Length: 301
Image (cartoon, rainbow, N blue to C red; front, top):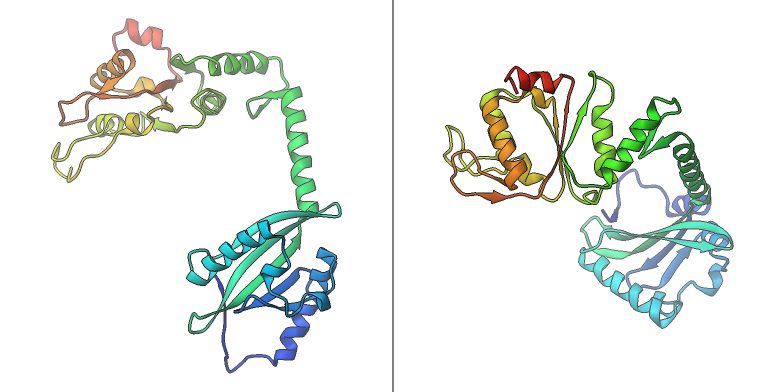
């Protein structure tokens, strides 16, 4: 939102505003409605390495090269029209990094009165960000994989499995006790796979009653049941070209398992209440804390 200026009963004397701006650590430059430099504080002079007396009264477009002036002119047009509310860009000045932000300034009647440019020194912030990234990469290279950290011998096969699984597009089943990090592994596989630029959709099969699970997974058509006032895409359609993570898959009822098998084998689904096949390109990662081999033998899965 652009800044607003207006007279109020508690307004300070104009000289007080000047004093406040003058002592600020951020560089402040204000250009009036005619795009002429009307104010520049000491911090702006220091940051930009210029003297205010050489720029006050000059048009913004005259103090830049033709290439930069064209971009500035376009930005000012958008400020006036209200299409752009702010613009931010980082610059490097004598080895320090500054974030330059520009805002349109409007009076209480929403009339455009000028543009304010604020420069902030973000050198330390950028240094810490880069240092954090370097340390993160060092930790991951020595003790982790795919944003997961672990030094114990038991974790090394897990990291190797994640790397191998991420390189292929096969259906994956993760097994292990509750709380052992199956969802973290699923997310790591997805984020390092060829599908990483598309959605990872999670479904907790144990959290949904049987009557809702099919509609949640495969969607429904308008009028499929009471309250279905419009068609709705299911999780499989939402995960198209991405990954769907079926947590607690052993809790899925047999009727839904049959439809899941069709999605696996034929890459198609049918919405609840519909009769048309919808093609979906989805990788499935499932997880359970139960022994599915025994469940199959007992014909409960």
